[in-house]
Length: 207
Length: 207
Image (cartoon, rainbow over all chains, first blue to last red; front, side, top):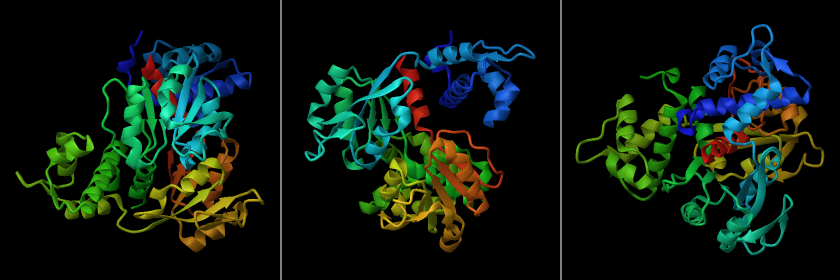
């Protein structure tokens, strides 16, 4: 079995995309699909699909294709999302609120189990079915809920201190929306989503 | 001079990060910086900085470093953001609203010049200083404002038709937040930001 660090983030992201396609197909009642058909329907590359899946020992049968249910289960296990991942949101501003209400974060194998903010007017109010707690309660909140993933949606100036608090409270992974380079703790994985960088990438190709 | 397609999106994203650091340094009144000091301050790799900048013909002077103002200007020109890029948002839901209020999209070289939604209760109301217009007015709205970049923040089910409308209205680049594989028009660059994929990537590394 391939170990977690063997696979590049880009390949991982393709696996996520395939998984989404397979769920879609299963919901439609499709039980088998060939790589060509999957590529055509979802605007992907058939040879890339075959290559990626073969890397994990999954081969379609010629003229028959892949077993949709089996492949879905296999990819979910591969991504580690066959079980539920409780997640928290730190910062109930515009981005934090949008993420709390984002359907994908309440479906499948992710669940927002707690939301924190340091604004006393927000503490105690409800957001996406969760009562907002004060940031001071981060550590007990993480312990109670068993949360593993934190979504960091605070202003840039306070991102580092909030990240530090998450590390100390035992969070294992952070999805960071603050446009800063965090000083990272080696044991906590961070994925930074910097929206301005996406815009700059698009601007580059406008030239 | 290096042409737009020579550079990988990953390298481009690093250039964006360097640019952000340089702006920060300039705001602090720093006029020269060595790669080691820049790496230390912003948690980057000094050798990667030198390698990336050398690729564009920029070399720091030994013991003196890079000229901050010159390098900033050079990188802005490289990214094509020395001029203003008018952008629109399609979909004034939670994500669209958060993006409209995101400080980065109203500063530097990006400006949200129009916002569209098909909900009549939202049309005519103001968001981030912009009056929301009906999606039917997409084509004239893009023509009037000269917008080049569209941020697509609509539900997955209607993402393709909205994308199509943007292509027909002459938009050149799309930042897509709908979790779907769009069928792409060759002349329009698309960057899809799929929030669930980031969560799945983090879940993978929790194993």
